[in-house]
Length: 293
Image 1 (cartoon, rainbow, N blue to C red):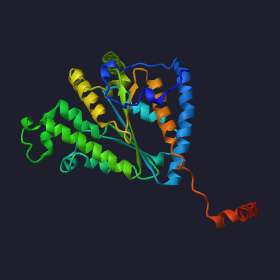
Image 2 (image 1 turned 90 degrees about the vertical axis):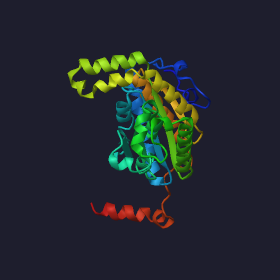
Image 3 (image 1 turned 180 degrees about the vertical axis):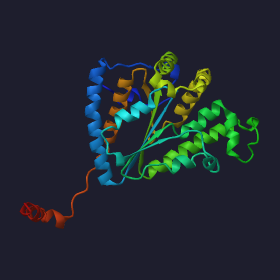
Image 4 (image 1 turned 30 degrees about the vertical axis):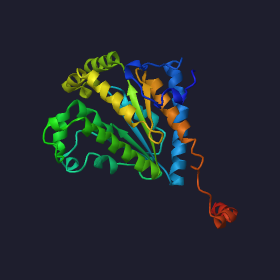
């Protein structure tokens, strides 16, 4: 199997999405990829237990991608061995009336994971510089002062949004949240195949919406918005990773590897030691329990 080099996928300088690979098989069969993932997700589950016991960090894992990029199945497969109480998954859809009564980051802020847990965002605060940038009329629903028409949504408006998002992520990072952001990069042809699959397989029909085709027609617009968002917000404390995702099994393994190897670098995350008094009396406690037999 090809060795996974994290640096290959991390965005540390400006990228052009059309130049990046969307397909990777790691020189392995699907069976080999699945087998490797099994071991990694067990280790990830063990790490999450330690993270919970340590109680000083939270982990925020963000997934973005075009429709059909495989976010749902990737989340299911990677975190399968984690304690269900240690992983909180939030899927952000069209803002509710309550959410629109607050600033656009509010609903994401209140969904952040507490210390000791993984928080997974399936679609994220980046929708506010992606779908709203492709459809700027949606911004008008936010009732922002001095934004009365689409004409008021200019370059300065988007510059401020990128700055606000960077400030949000810097703030939570400085207060103990480890941030990972993944863009699942698929080709337009792969999306066509996956949409057709949803239509051809009756059990997948429920996933299809005619709106998927309307958004697909805006593919180039979305790619440009993703590219700008990634380039302007990939920071050392909140890095973006662009994952080739035409091959779902390889994408899952790459993401799991990045998470596990990156988290293991935090050497201070370890289970707390027992109180000296308890440690000194362990044999007594064991004896008490053994006598119950």
